[in-house]
Amino acid sequence: MNKVPHRSGFVSIIGKPNAGKSTLLNQLLGRKLVITTPTAQTTRHRIFGIDSSENHQIVYSDTPGLIRPRYKLQERMMGSISQSLEDADLILLVIAVDESYPEDQIVKLAEKTEIPKILVLNKMDAVSEEKLFKRMQEMAAKVDFVEAIPISALNGHNVEKLKELTLNYIPEGPAYFDKEQVSDRPERFFVAEMIREKIFLLMRQELPYSTEVVVESFDEDEEQIRIEATIHVTTKQHKGMVIGKGAKNLKKIGTMARKDIEQFLANSVYLNLYVKVSEGWKDSDFHLRGFGYQ
Image 1 (cartoon, rainbow, N blue to C red):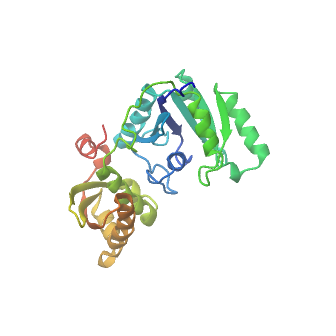
Image 2 (cartoon, one colour; image 1 turned 120 degrees about the horizontal axis):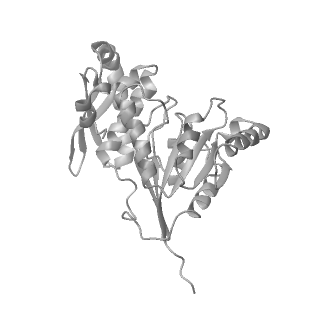
Image 3 (cartoon, rainbow, N blue to C red; image 1 turned 90 degrees about the horizontal axis):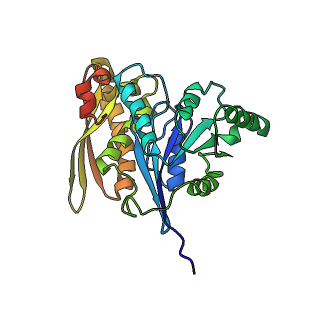
């Protein structure tokens, strides 16, 4: 009886903001690993999501949405996309079919690399079959794809088929990570992201883009995990908005985040949040390094 070869490789998920990349990664992994909000540019870091079985290990890279950077934070974000292409065995180019905006940046990026590409037409349930086929033809005329597949990342339609297609382009080889590992990021990173997600969901408009979250302490004992985190904002006005009258907003952010963190860590959590003004952090090399933007 022939033994099934073990496959392992890196798959980069690339697309514009709000194309559904993070939602797709969560579906591919079968769990919520990365944060998702209706607000564009929620994802700021390159995050590995590791899908392992007895016969394979696929290391997905969730990346920020492709944009033209206007300040240093966005430059670092775009740099993480370039980095994700350097070690990729396969690229998933995610297109939201309900959008009519040009995909020039994605096409330009795709043309620069000979890495195999799968065209992933997301939000298929939001358009007619005719429009779906038209979008597929438009992209196929511009970029050389090895496969094209319509999906709905939100409800999981065709995601398993996409995983099967992906495996066809993953080389044989040993696992890169322990089979029990789900990401390259530590727990503290995901705690900070969950807090930031609640800021995005509650504050809306421009304020979330001016906030960053840093976990200052993470102390664990048998009964509880005590976490202290700082929400950095750019102005005193933003600080007041995040805190809210009678600390109403800050309490709501903390309560919502704590529920997700407890589920993620499978433990009771005491969460204490602070708000600090860090002027100009989005354009400060010092602050960006401190916040983990390489």
